[in-house]
Image 1 (cartoon, helix red, strand yellow):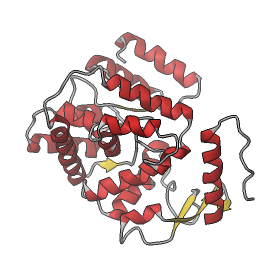
Image 2 (cartoon, helix red, strand yellow):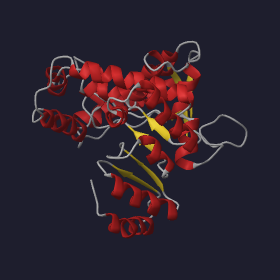
Image 3 (cartoon, one colour):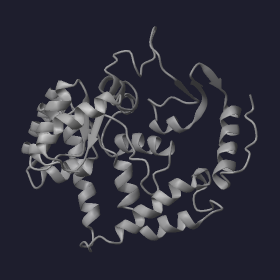
Amino acid sequence: SDLNPEEADGLVQGLRRQGVDQIKFRDLRKPAFLALAASARAQGMRLTGHAPVGIGIGEAAEAGLSSLEHMDTVSESLGDAPDPERGEEFARMARAGTGLTPTLVTTIAYRMTPDAHAYAVIADTAGRLDRRRRFLSRDMLAAWKFGLDAKQLEGAVPDGFWAKAFDRQVADLKLAHRAGVRLMVGTDLGVSLVYPGYAVHEEMNALVTLGGLTPLEALRAATATPAAIITADPAGGRISPGAAADLVLLAHDPLADIRAISDIDAVVAAGRLLTHADLRALQRRAQVLAASPDATPPPPSR
């Protein structure tokens, strides 16, 4: 939300004392944004958020924005500007090193899917419409319903409005990619039909099939690029000597087909190997907990 520019220093310093190292905002207007950006930069804190209001994304990037979140806010900020002007804004972002998290999967799930289907999934306690629903907690389902209910308060839009808006977002993503903007994989978890874990794979697939990224670029957008932007660790998110990272081991080559990222054979997490059988056991435990949070889940396989 908006804030008085004079309050920015105190807000940032207070967050810093609490151990916060990154600030996210939304709906900030230019004076408040510039004050917050200056304060965050002085405190050595990262600043990320929706495209601010009343200031171009290029200028915002040059003011110290670490990353922009959600392609819809970016496209809305660019308005009706022609492609050459949009491309120049993205070029300024690229030169500033600002990242971009498109979250296409959120627009697809929340705007491109009929609300009736989403409500039906929530009501489907047996998970027949979508088996992934069996793993969702009551809190997650409540968040989904809240978001859907809030949509009903929006005014009517012309037929085809969201499809046209999504086409613009995809076109802007391609312009950003062409300009060299650093792209990151994100999902905006909590939005209806955005399934934890699965949505990461869906977003990577969308970046390739819709956004024009290569599978390798999509993999980097989920690993090395976020590590570089969020932690500033050049060794993060990489498989190399001396690097510290968890590993997902796949049964097939994702460079040949990005959909292979869903074919997981094993995981190494915090130094522990989880085999395919272990992962299935974890899914069974998650399903039990989701169905009855007070139930005692079966023990892990090892």
